[in-house]
Image 1 (tube, rainbow, N blue to C red):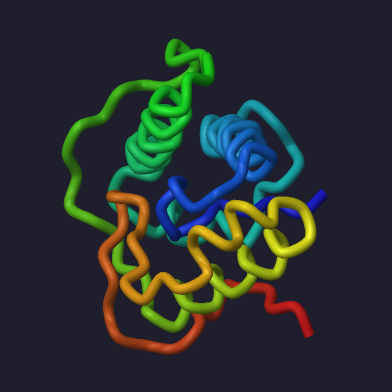
Image 2: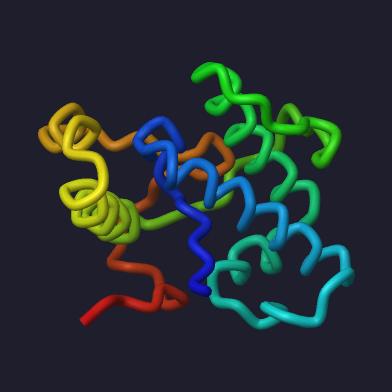
Length: 146
């Protein structure tokens, strides 16, 4: 299984992507809590681990996923996360954001053409509010598809 903790805002994800993000985010939370042996060195966790408060940041990240799910009428279990309202954002490069958005578009063109059509011409890509965009190329922790 490939874990993907998207930097882009969860509003862009299709149903399958949003459900996977919630599940994978909860797995990442267990990793940071030391409750599982797998995925401890997964590159997608690197930016959270490097933050001042890794678990708080991951909870804040998952809260944004929860809010998106709620806005769509999904019933994600909020009790699985701690609500964190404000933390200084973690930097993420514009190159990473563009890479992730293209990666998502490539998935959507196959599995959700309607969502693909709605977002394909997006020029200002929003990020999960725990992040802020900075200049730069694709992040070094990203495992790029060749």
